[in-house]
Image 1 (tube, rainbow, N blue to C red):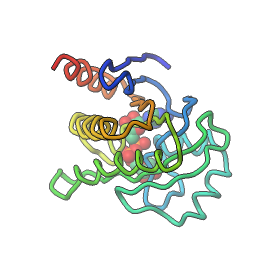
Image 2: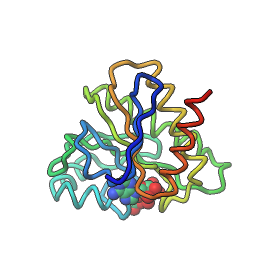
Image 3: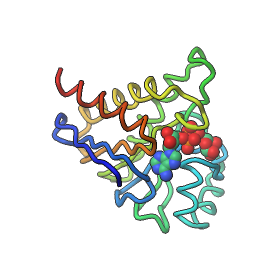
Image 4: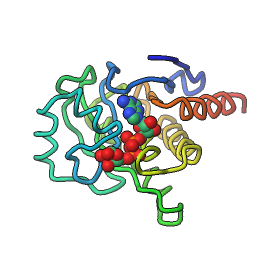
Length: 182
Ligand code: AR6
């Protein structure tokens, strides 16, 4: 982990980390997957590499996942107990329901965490790599969905935004700091 920042609002239940999500010892990490759930590059590739081949086996048995929804598996060789696989939207300019689909990735992943009794959950910046979602817009959607969910649901102890790239980390940092001032 390179940097860490605790958001003082919502009882310190939001944390920002600059680092690799596959290294986090949390109940569940979220994977930015594709509809096949059979692996890929980016964070998806990193998660499958670190979890080992049994993750792919379990994913194969699920049979895919539509955009905006989420599926649950074990974490195998990962330090995280479970993986929540969600499929973010490919960004086609913003007029194709991308924002709503990205928001539902966060909502459905959090619902999945609650159903499976996960108290700590880490998100990557879904869709902001290969799927091309503009990082600042995506960060606002992620933050507002997580904030709303934590406000309504008290069973989750901590949500970590795990930013791999410095640009996302800096965007989230500014967003959290300025939101804390309001
Ligand atoms: N830990 C945390 N975040 C990471 C890591 C990591 N180890 N590696 C990359 N990121 P992407 P997408 C960040 O491309 O845009 C796959 O092939 C990265 O900096 O992984 O949703 C899937 O199979 C970026 O900000 O996912 C799909 O086909 C963020 O993760 C497609 O890519 C998301 O980038 C999904 O594209």
